[in-house]
Amino acid sequence: MSLRPLFVTQVYEATLAGAAGFPVFNAELADACRMLAAEDLAGRQWCKAHGYRGYTSYGSLTDLPVRLPEFGELKRHLDKHAQTYAKALNFDLSRKPRLDNIWVNILKPGGGHTGHIHPHAFLSGT
Image 1 (tube, rainbow, N blue to C red):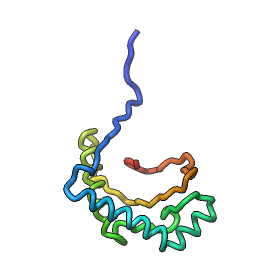
Image 2 (cartoon, helix red, strand yellow):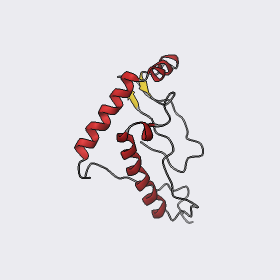
Image 3 (cartoon, rainbow, N blue to C red):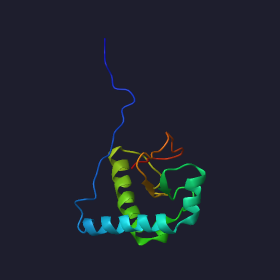
Image 4 (cartoon, helix red, strand yellow):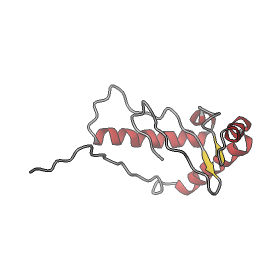
């Protein structure tokens, strides 16, 4: 008899909390999220139409890193971590991985996401 690992998933974990200026960055990012929830009428309408308990920019905004500098900075951090992860897994990629979409979710108590997949994604996460 033998045992062998199959379908092993290498999970990458990292934090931005140790970076210089993180508390300010985190507060500014949270403020930007709340601002979007208050000002994104199309997003709020999408949430209402889909029974979403809270706010998401998923159905309305696709340009957050360009629209707001806080998300541009977040994208730079995430792209760096995606590259580190790809190298650690020895992926042979024709180009560097990059974030191509990001959205805001602010859930009310009792709110949640239904199960879903991210097709064509090299990686995804929260």
